Image: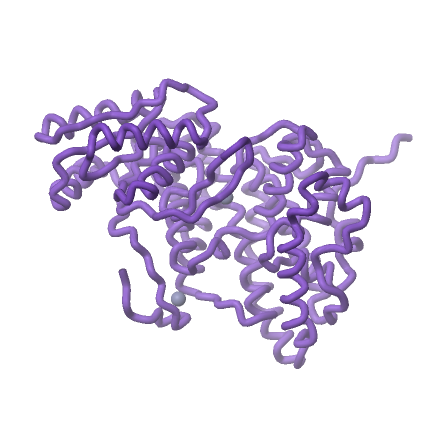
Length: 437
Ligand SMILES: [Zn+2]
Ligand SMILES: [Zn+2]
């Protein structure tokens, strides 16, 4: 834990994760970490796939080194949910094994379940990723699905992360694409963060920004290598995903890694939950959304200096309510927060011409990566038109028209809606069907 203010922003960036290793000798370093902690009894949590990929060997290594190793191995090969049953199974294993330390060997669900169960039991855990598929490894929130509903719960971050590039690059190629999609979304998240901090007193930190931007840039420039599972490229992706988690921990919220492109993905999750489309992997959704998010952001640059006229977040017309269905009422608190944001900062914009020029300069800089983002999305096979992942043109337009109802965090969609420009911009940048001739 740091106790000195950041030289970049003056905040205390509290990160409880002690060690992050992405290297070929990750297993040896993990062994040394476990010994330094004085952990004798260990619990390894894995599923059938991740046990085969790494968990079984790791457990054998640790047993050979003199540790008492218990395993919680989920039999599922796919479809394991981060639900009450899975959490209960890990809690039972914790009660039976009474370990000194816990190792979560796997990707998204294994980590979320282990993180949540160890948090409830007040037990530290170490994360051992097996695929570069998502940015939650170093995060402190758990994405759970209770009673069939997806929720994110504040829990604890891992004590350490040990990732072996040889294991990661042997992950299913599709999972590498998921991770790529999640990481490339940080380009749009960064723009929204710069924008919101320029319009309000929301903190911004260039040091935290750079931790995500550097590996992001490397990934964008090495997409072909990444898709070929080149080990160095996979290391860059994994580092970017882990750094995104640390960046969120440093700011105390998900702002450095999540903007309107993530809100679009949440909107699609809601449509899937309502049976209006099939569920799709998070990273694919975020990558797909990033193309349109960055187009909207780029279009906002021409309108930046216009005043904010109305609060964003919705009058709640029938069209809007149709998309949210019975979830609509639950969005009241977000609406209230948007109103409060507007009451506090709405009059302050555009302020002086210098202020607008300064923000415009910072946003142009944030957008300077967008052409390369688009090219990288092309190479990775993310289409630029509607119809992918069960999102047709009508749904795509509704996504960027209404996704800002789902989260109180200010994004470019709120700016444009407040300026009464959002509809025009969506007409301008979203793909439309070619008229039948
Ligand atoms: Zn800082
Ligand atoms: Zn994400």
